Amino acid sequence: MSRDKYPAEPAGAFPDPPTTVEDREDRSITVRRYDEERDRAALEAMYDAFDPADRAQGIPPTGADRIADWLDSITGEGTVNVVATHRDTVVGHATLVPDEPEATAELAIFVLQDYQGAGIGTLLIETLLGAGRAAGVERVWLSVERWNEPAISLYEKVGFVPSDTESFEHEMAIRL
Amino acid sequence: MKLLLGIGGSDDSIHALERAVDRVAETGDDLTVAILRNPATEAEPAAIEERVQAVLDDAGVSAVVRHLEGDPGSQLVDLAERESFDRIVLGGGETSPMGKIKLGGIAEFVLLNSHVSVTLVR
Image (cartoon, rainbow over all chains, first blue to last red; front, side, top):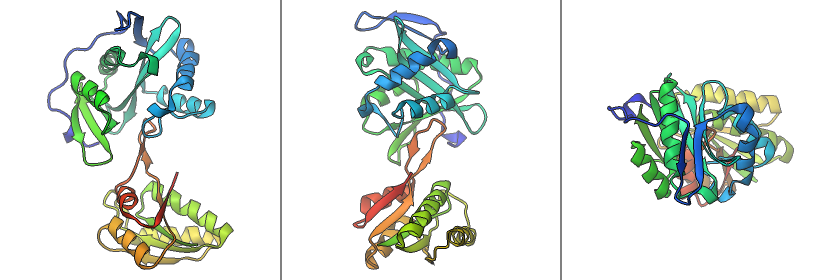
C-alpha cells in the first residue's frame, strides 16, 4: 500500500508483553511474545480447532499441512508474533508480516471462538503493535471484510483509520 | 466448450493462462484469449501476447488471440455475451504477504456482472 495512505501522526503507547488480565469471563489470559519451541504445537492446535465459518480471505487455511505451511511463513524471518494463552492452550494469535517498502507490515489477528467478545482481541492487537514498534515497524495495514463491524470497531479503537474502502475488502492503516 | 480467457498481465492472470491452456490441451475446448488493459499492472499488450503465444506453443494448443481496448471488465463481459461463450476464465486474485486472497478489480466486475459462468483459477 502506498505511503500516503497512513495517518500522519503515530499512534499512542502500547503495553509491553507479557501482560496478564482477567477477561470478561474471569479467565486469566496472558498475552506474550510467541516462542516457536514452546508455542508451535499449541498454535497449530488452535488453528485446527478454528471454526472455518470465521475464515476471512482464505485464512486461516484448513488441514494440518496447509496450516503448517502458512504458520512457517507468518512466523518466519522478520515477522512479529504474539499469542494469548489460557492455562496451557493458545486461544488467540496476532501477527505482523513484512511487506514493501521497508518497515511496513500487514497485520492479522485470530481469537478462538469461545474466547471472542471477552476483550482478548484488543489486548492482543495492542501488545502486537507495541512489539512491532520495538522491532522497528513503522507502518501497519490490514484488510477486513466490510461487513465485519466488530472487527472494524476494534481496529478503530486502537487507532487504525480507513485507507482503501473501494474494493471488496476494507483496508485500514496505522502509523507506529 | 467455448472458453474466453481474460489476461491483463498480472501474475494471477499468467497462472490462469497456463492452467487453462493445460486443460484445453486435454479437453480440446475452443479457447479465445482476450488481452486486456489491467490498470493495476504496467504490462504491455505486445509483451502479454508474446507470453500467451509462448505458453500456447509449449502446450501445442491453438487459440484465437484478441485485444480488448477500454474498460477491461465490461469489455470482457460484453464480448462473452455477444459471441455466446460458455465460460469466462480469469486469474483468481493475488495473495497478500499474510496469505490473504485479494480479488482483482477485473474479476470483481466480471463476477458481479456476467451472465456467462465464470471460473477463477487459484
